[in-house]
Image (tube, rainbow, N blue to C red; front, side, top):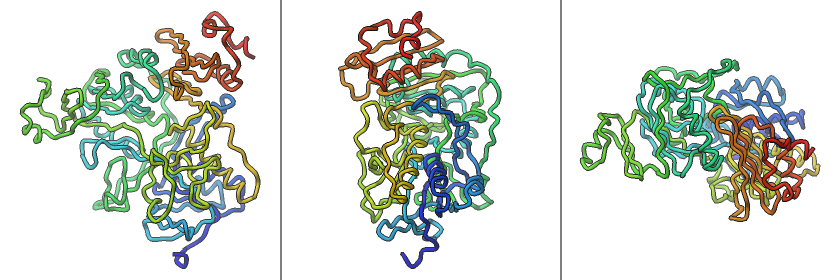
Length: 500
């Protein structure tokens, strides 16, 4: 292996998503003279734009797709290698790409992201949405659809159900309430009316440039499943793209074939039992089908006994760490969720190999107010911190765990409301030893605070509450709030004045 190395780089980063690109930017600015290589299967990279530090830990940014040449122009020391990784040899510090080239590294950072947990492989009527290609394919298929079934309860499912129009949506969630990953049943009840109301007019169209992947040449293969994995498809032209940006549905017209607005039916506490075609349906005369089902290309049976026919099933059931090409022949320690275990310097168990973003699992002792969630913000933070650590190790400088890992914080948008999550926002790991304070103004705001031993440990803010900085400070300084009691959320008290 060693004798075949085409070139050895000081730093190699695998993956053109947010974690990988942020890591490259960080390394290139810390050590401008170092040879850096970015190995990515997609011609486009994900760049963080309009970055804004909102408070100590809260940050807002957009994610844009850009040609990788943009990075190379910015950092003369960077080489972008367009290929997927076939195998990694940690002993000889070498990587082999699917096009047969071998590259050496001194330090490697794996930012392979996650791949969708598809309900079923190779079913043409089941689509996972993970990257730009699959979102475009979904748009194309949706334009002919009268009814789709969306399975899942994470961020993509929430956005999709809200954005789709002109098509009936059956939404199957395994929990008692929507958005279970992000908030409790109270917040879900606050948001549900938005599914029935008319959507507010879009302010202005999203003006950022979009880059799309070209259609393949005639005869070239191009399969649209979200996990476009060359090994399974038997073709190296279908590599997985990196994940979508937080506002991926902007500028994509998610319109079904019917006129009129949204119709969303929710099926709670159920999962998919079986997916079958109309031919297979004839062999199940005992199926309890709703009479208006008529003839659909695909049918989905839920564990609550209901069967629906539809044009398309969207699998939005989360991601699994994409460790596939890196494990064979190496001894990586894996976490229970399948991620590469990393310590508080983002190092894996293999020497000189780091990891960041969805592919890794944070296995250091977490701050009591932080937890890992595979989100945009954390991919950026981990990539940035991994780059800092790699540079510090090469320069023999000490480095401490970054402050962003002190407090979990995330800003997003659901159903057109601003949503801020802080700390143990869902009471994660607190058992029954906590109390909730809630303030809710229908159609305007939903504020939930989680207290443990009289101290604030988490909060959910939906709407323009302007409380995020105050609450962030209260969680970080662990002030005893017992004297304030219920007054803490009294809308007539200007809480910021109290705690400035």
